[in-house]
Length: 285
View 1 (cartoon, helix red, strand yellow):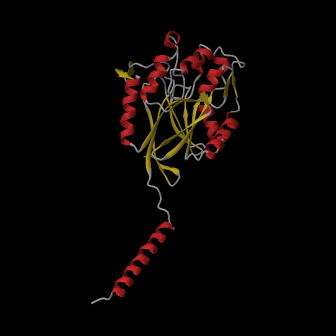
View 2 (cartoon, rainbow, N blue to C red; view 1 turned 90 degrees about the vertical axis):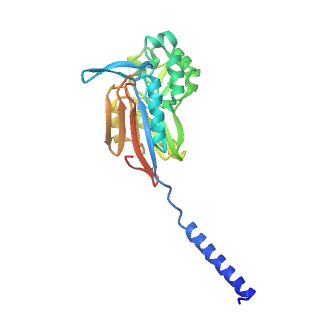
View 3 (cartoon, rainbow, N blue to C red; view 1 turned 180 degrees about the horizontal axis):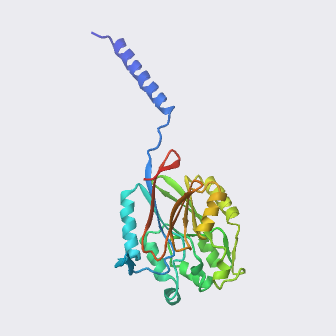
């Protein structure tokens, strides 16, 4: 028969063993599990919020439309650990923009679940005041770091960047506008000043987002593929560039930066998938 002292010693020994195991485990933090993420994109929608017919390999098929984009995005979200839906601009265009001042497009994009939008040059076709009115219908973050509108309402509605968290990953998104804005719209530099030092602006945004402890940094641009490539070459710290303005499909890696562009009209939903683990983008998902 064991004495009370024997039981006491057994309990103490067990406690010491458990405590030691806890300390050893605490001394080596477990790595977070990899997460599968998706960046979903549209560019240059140009007010195509309803489905339309497009010829593909000689066959007419129905494509696009915000309802179809929303449905596809929801399906992707169900397959991944986290996802964001982004637009790189030129979502508004005549004649619908003339008639309704952006209300159907921006209310629809809000309902479709967009997370961030960068303005394109066509958003300014009717002037800063009308675009300010249009953004009043939007519930989506609008980002552009290199424009300074004189219109106070518009300036308040456009931020340099937004931070989104999905599946525990902090994603910083900053926007860039084409330096050609005064040449391709009716707005003057006095109405909307565009800083054409894209690399300088981008470096400042990367620094700010790194200070905000962002895990991934996305440049949401409406500057065209040539300038996107220059951005990848000149600015460290950008992980992904989601571009627009060229009306082309693009998916390439340059200087370690993934660059994508999703053609035009919302005919298809661009989907970039990848795995995030150990504090970095590791592999395609």
